[in-house]
Image (cartoon, rainbow, N blue to C red; front, top):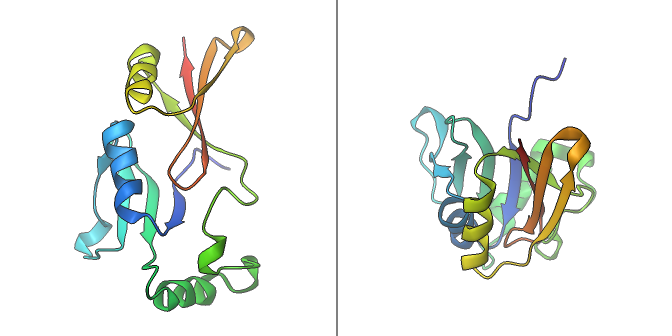
Length: 146
């Protein structure tokens, strides 16, 4: 039933920094919003195939009510807590995984940005992995199949 990951919604106090991380560090594309919608607090980040895989939803730290109330309205009791101080790390999500290509180029690019990385090889699966956190403390698993 499930074909693939559609997108992950990241709610952040660090909107610009988050957009820059995914576009400048990881080389993804900022597609704005679908259907011509306009917002200075929302963006969709696309992979190499132009699939929107991340929805970045910014919260104004000076006035978080509008965004947080919208999330509460949409998710109801599914989200136990949604306050400004909750917006760090992955909460119940351990990591978000992306299928990637060009291991050496990605590793070099992450290194140029001074990011802490962890590495894992799974030879039985012909898989190399790089783990790195985004500016919100969300762990990313970058998978490279050989």
